Image (cartoon, rainbow, N blue to C red; front, side, top):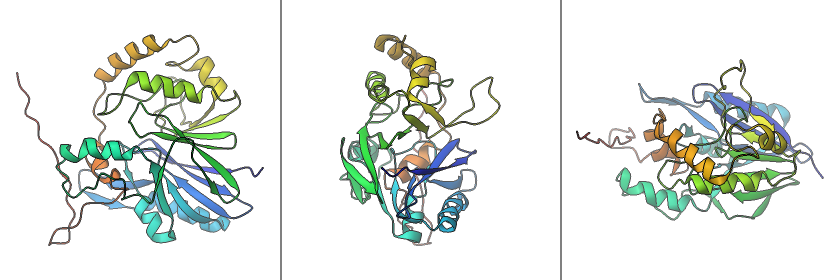
Length: 289
């Protein structure tokens, strides 16, 4: 069996890890969860982070054939369209992205947004398999953080998206529209039912207190023994109670409003206006006493 070659690229402004996964024998690669560099204050965007990934693939002689999103992220904007334009790669995400599109279409009055998932090239169902060269990829539907979260299992490696963080940091929030803490617990335990030695690759790291470096790889065994949220001693009811209290005190992600509008469109910005500029919307909510 071909072993995947995995390269991680950490974006500190959003605490996001993007991955370049390759079959070095066939020279075929995929990018998982690529980040668009976006400055909220100025509205300026560029592709420095993604250029690093493309440059590394080119140096290794790898052909990027696909961009794989684990879900519609709320903390960074996707650079998938840039990779597609540069390489011809197709963009894939879980089929339940249609549920997320239906949830957020009215929130941002995105009347031009289709809710059939057709902004993406591939919509994956739970259990579906596809290949990166000779690497077999299994799709695992792991909802709870959002309805559409999926993990990609490639050999002994699983790319878990936002479902899990490092054991000393815990788990994803479940308070976004369509999220559910009980569903998240069950999705996590589906991952933790894999063999102990299975490697788990996180989409984020926020450097838990007491640590002085960023980390994004753990194992199923480590999570079972040491996760501060879902170790073997934590029941479903205990997890739900913890998650609901914790989520109630969490701040809104800094890039939530632009991220959702762009990412439900597969990283595409709204069509530019007559002046050639694309605009994103900010829903205004009046606080009541």
